[in-house]
Length: 203
Image 1: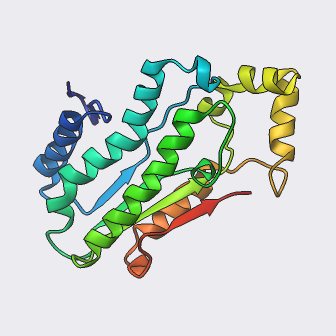
Image 2 (image 1 turned 90 degrees about the vertical axis):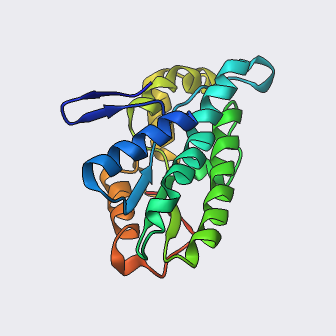
C-alpha cells in the first residue's frame, strides 16, 4: 500500500499495484512523466540447495518484476511524445555467474532481456531504454553480505573488503557518483541515439 510524507512517496515497487500508484502519484503532481530510473535492489547470499524460496521470490520481485510493472504503468506517459527515457540498474552480475547469488544473478540477467525488448518497442515512439551495470561499490548492500563473503574466502571481513577491492581493475570500488553520472548522460537529450544498451561502470 502506498503512503505519503512531505516530499516522500512510499510504495511497494515489487508489486504491480505499487508501481501503478507511483506513476499515478507523479502524474498527479507533475502532469507528465519523461524519465523513469529503476534502481531498487536487494541481496541474499546462499547456496542453491539452501536458498529460501521466499528470498528467491523477494529478489526476483524487486529487481525483475518491479521494473516490468513500472515500465508497463509508465509506458503511455513516456511514449506520449518523443524524448522519454528509461534507465534500469543492472549489474556486472548481469554478464556472468556469481556463487551463492542465484536469485540476484538471475534477476540481473533477466532485466537485460527486459531492457532490450522495451528498447525495441519504444524506439518508434522516441523512447530510449538502457541499463547501467555497476561493479562492486562500497554500499550498505555490499556490507550486508561481507560476513558470508568472508566465510567463503576463509578470511575476516576486513580482509574480504581488501580482496574485493584488489580484484577490481583499478584496485578501487566504483563511486556511486560515477553511476549517477552515467545515468545522467543516458537521460540527457544528447543520448537519444543510445538505445537498448547496458553500460558497465567499473573501476
